[in-house]
Length: 174
Length: 134
Image (cartoon, rainbow over all chains, first blue to last red):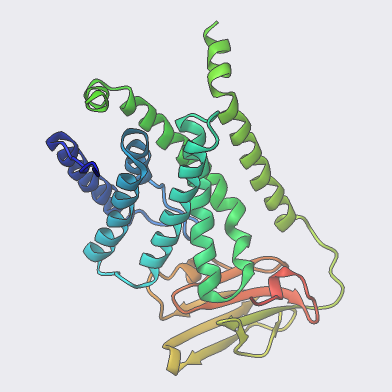
């Protein structure tokens, strides 16, 4: 007999809180001016990273995609350029982090975050290249990727601390 | 002992970080390395990969060029000043292309993503990556 998928109240509540946090971080981030075009600190990636280590990957994917849609809805940019850039970055970043976590077993949250941050910038540039129909946009990649690596490291540090915190440890044990 | 444990635990992360930083630095060197240029440099203004105005020779006198594509909602003014080009004004939101400032060497680029416009520098007939549309 097929086993029904169960959700604990704690889990649903935690996912809802994490979604709210991801939206808040994404929304705040959208107001940070771009010093280099396309570069954002990637604060919302913190939430996806934590979820990837706590729940099955589809929960993290769901929150990541919902975050992109809801932030775009809040900003009034749904199905416009910033939405597609954000979606491109989120999808590639998630795919790479998933691969890193489940295949590259020698990496900890730091390595996974660094690869995710790197892929996020790459995903955004691929969307930009598709829109502007030129490969020359990759001129920006070295600058964007170096900044992404710094933000990825900071995100990983925060995620590592949070994953070791008592409330999250307790939730993981449930 | 703590340092040894740290390196044992994070060796994979360190190697990944070093590889990614090296890759970025290598690409940066590739893009910023000075290149021998024979002949005049031109600015190529493209919309969706297609040239929309004649290439602008950088060595000319200061002048402004208007890029107007009413069907695509594009209205930009590109200025040649002191052998450099920059976007003087644009109808895009964000105005990132205006803030990018002037460019003057090959491989440099100004992007206006909302308007689908790219400005690259190259010599005429150059077939490097900066002038090859997808």
